[in-house]
Length: 163
Image (tube, rainbow, N blue to C red; front, top):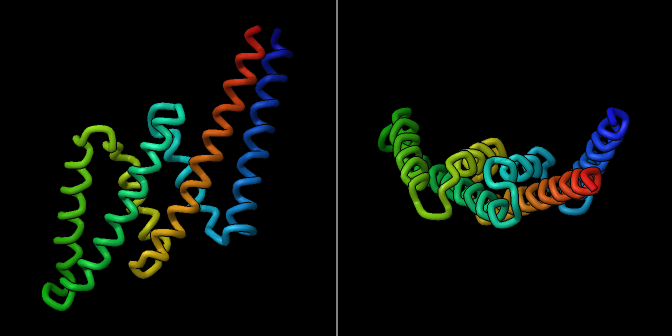
Protein backbone atom coordinates (compact mmCIF):
# COMPACT_ATOMS: atom_id res chain seq x y z
CA UNK A 1 0.00 0.00 0.00
CA UNK A 2 2.82 2.44 0.84
CA UNK A 3 4.53 1.58 -2.44
CA UNK A 4 1.34 2.41 -4.37
CA UNK A 5 1.05 5.77 -2.60
CA UNK A 6 4.69 6.54 -3.37
CA UNK A 7 4.21 5.45 -6.99
CA UNK A 8 1.14 7.68 -7.36
CA UNK A 9 2.98 10.58 -5.75
CA UNK A 10 5.88 10.14 -8.17
CA UNK A 11 3.47 10.05 -11.12
CA UNK A 12 1.93 13.31 -9.94
CA UNK A 13 5.31 14.97 -9.32
CA UNK A 14 6.71 13.91 -12.69
CA UNK A 15 3.51 14.78 -14.56
CA UNK A 16 3.22 18.22 -12.99
CA UNK A 17 6.92 18.85 -13.56
CA UNK A 18 6.55 17.98 -17.25
CA UNK A 19 3.59 20.37 -17.51
CA UNK A 20 5.49 23.16 -15.71
CA UNK A 21 8.61 22.74 -17.83
CA UNK A 22 6.53 22.60 -21.01
CA UNK A 23 4.73 25.81 -20.05
CA UNK A 24 8.06 27.47 -19.22
CA UNK A 25 9.51 26.39 -22.56
CA UNK A 26 6.45 27.65 -24.44
CA UNK A 27 6.68 30.94 -22.56
CA UNK A 28 10.23 31.58 -23.62
CA UNK A 29 10.55 29.83 -26.97
CA UNK A 30 7.15 30.26 -28.60
CA UNK A 31 5.56 33.31 -26.96
CA UNK A 32 8.66 35.20 -25.80
CA UNK A 33 7.10 36.09 -22.45
CA UNK A 34 8.90 35.84 -19.11
CA UNK A 35 8.67 32.55 -17.26
CA UNK A 36 8.11 34.31 -13.94
CA UNK A 37 4.99 35.94 -15.41
CA UNK A 38 3.72 32.53 -16.52
CA UNK A 39 4.08 31.37 -12.91
CA UNK A 40 1.96 34.33 -11.76
CA UNK A 41 -0.89 32.71 -13.71
CA UNK A 42 0.00 29.29 -12.29
CA UNK A 43 -0.15 30.66 -8.75
CA UNK A 44 -3.43 32.47 -9.44
CA UNK A 45 -5.15 29.20 -10.33
CA UNK A 46 -4.48 27.88 -6.84
CA UNK A 47 -5.60 30.98 -4.92
CA UNK A 48 -9.13 29.63 -4.51
CA UNK A 49 -11.74 27.29 -5.97
CA UNK A 50 -9.78 24.56 -7.70
CA UNK A 51 -11.84 24.11 -10.86
CA UNK A 52 -11.96 25.58 -14.35
CA UNK A 53 -14.62 28.20 -13.60
CA UNK A 54 -12.80 29.54 -10.53
CA UNK A 55 -9.48 29.35 -12.37
CA UNK A 56 -10.85 31.63 -15.09
CA UNK A 57 -12.22 34.03 -12.47
CA UNK A 58 -8.86 34.01 -10.65
CA UNK A 59 -7.06 34.77 -13.92
CA UNK A 60 -9.52 37.59 -14.66
CA UNK A 61 -8.71 39.09 -11.26
CA UNK A 62 -5.00 38.95 -12.10
CA UNK A 63 -5.71 40.77 -15.36
CA UNK A 64 -7.75 43.38 -13.47
CA UNK A 65 -4.71 43.80 -11.22
CA UNK A 66 -2.43 44.26 -14.23
CA UNK A 67 -4.83 46.91 -15.57
CA UNK A 68 -4.82 48.63 -12.18
CA UNK A 69 -1.03 48.62 -12.26
CA UNK A 70 -0.96 50.16 -15.72
CA UNK A 71 -3.47 52.82 -14.63
CA UNK A 72 -1.41 53.50 -11.50
CA UNK A 73 1.73 54.01 -13.59
CA UNK A 74 -0.11 56.47 -15.82
CA UNK A 75 -1.49 58.38 -12.84
CA UNK A 76 2.01 58.45 -11.29
CA UNK A 77 3.32 60.10 -14.45
CA UNK A 78 0.62 62.78 -14.19
CA UNK A 79 0.91 63.38 -10.43
CA UNK A 80 4.69 63.31 -10.02
CA UNK A 81 5.24 66.80 -11.49
CA UNK A 82 2.61 68.13 -9.08
CA UNK A 83 3.23 66.10 -5.92
CA UNK A 84 6.84 65.04 -6.39
CA UNK A 85 7.82 62.07 -4.25
CA UNK A 86 4.42 62.13 -2.54
CA UNK A 87 2.72 60.98 -5.72
CA UNK A 88 3.52 57.38 -4.72
CA UNK A 89 1.54 57.83 -1.49
CA UNK A 90 -1.53 59.11 -3.32
CA UNK A 91 -1.39 56.44 -6.04
CA UNK A 92 -0.77 53.49 -3.69
CA UNK A 93 -3.59 54.73 -1.44
CA UNK A 94 -6.00 54.97 -4.38
CA UNK A 95 -5.04 51.62 -5.90
CA UNK A 96 -5.30 49.90 -2.52
CA UNK A 97 -8.75 51.41 -1.92
CA UNK A 98 -9.85 50.17 -5.35
CA UNK A 99 -8.41 46.66 -4.89
CA UNK A 100 -9.82 46.26 -1.39
CA UNK A 101 -13.21 47.54 -2.58
CA UNK A 102 -13.20 45.10 -5.51
CA UNK A 103 -12.70 42.28 -2.98
CA UNK A 104 -16.38 42.83 -2.09
CA UNK A 105 -17.57 42.73 -5.73
CA UNK A 106 -19.66 39.79 -6.90
CA UNK A 107 -17.75 37.03 -8.76
CA UNK A 108 -14.55 38.93 -9.60
CA UNK A 109 -13.45 39.44 -6.01
CA UNK A 110 -10.14 37.62 -5.59
CA UNK A 111 -7.96 40.04 -3.63
CA UNK A 112 -4.86 37.84 -4.06
CA UNK A 113 -5.46 37.85 -7.81
CA UNK A 114 -5.65 41.65 -7.91
CA UNK A 115 -2.38 42.01 -6.03
CA UNK A 116 -0.67 39.30 -8.10
CA UNK A 117 -1.57 41.33 -11.19
CA UNK A 118 -0.30 44.56 -9.64
CA UNK A 119 2.96 42.91 -8.63
CA UNK A 120 3.33 41.34 -12.07
CA UNK A 121 2.92 44.68 -13.82
CA UNK A 122 5.41 46.52 -11.62
CA UNK A 123 7.87 43.59 -11.70
CA UNK A 124 7.80 43.67 -15.50
CA UNK A 125 9.37 47.16 -15.52
CA UNK A 126 7.41 47.90 -18.70
CA UNK A 127 5.97 51.29 -19.54
CA UNK A 128 2.18 51.41 -19.25
CA UNK A 129 0.82 50.16 -22.57
CA UNK A 130 -1.49 47.73 -24.28
CA UNK A 131 1.61 45.74 -25.26
CA UNK A 132 2.63 45.34 -21.60
CA UNK A 133 -0.90 44.22 -20.74
CA UNK A 134 -0.93 41.75 -23.64
CA UNK A 135 2.43 40.26 -22.70
CA UNK A 136 1.43 39.74 -19.08
CA UNK A 137 -2.04 38.48 -20.03
CA UNK A 138 -0.56 35.90 -22.40
CA UNK A 139 1.98 34.73 -19.83
CA UNK A 140 -0.57 34.53 -17.00
CA UNK A 141 -3.10 32.74 -19.20
CA UNK A 142 -0.52 30.15 -20.19
CA UNK A 143 0.37 29.65 -16.52
CA UNK A 144 -3.24 29.33 -15.39
CA UNK A 145 -3.95 26.81 -18.17
CA UNK A 146 -0.86 24.80 -17.22
CA UNK A 147 -1.90 24.85 -13.55
CA UNK A 148 -5.35 23.60 -14.50
CA UNK A 149 -3.76 20.81 -16.55
CA UNK A 150 -1.46 19.88 -13.66
CA UNK A 151 -4.34 19.89 -11.17
CA UNK A 152 -6.49 17.81 -13.52
CA UNK A 153 -3.68 15.28 -13.93
CA UNK A 154 -3.29 15.04 -10.16
CA UNK A 155 -7.04 14.43 -9.70
CA UNK A 156 -7.06 11.78 -12.43
CA UNK A 157 -4.16 9.87 -10.87
CA UNK A 158 -5.79 10.09 -7.45
CA UNK A 159 -9.13 8.86 -8.86
CA UNK A 160 -7.44 5.93 -10.58
CA UNK A 161 -5.61 5.05 -7.37
CA UNK A 162 -8.91 4.99 -5.46
CA UNK A 163 -10.41 2.44 -7.86
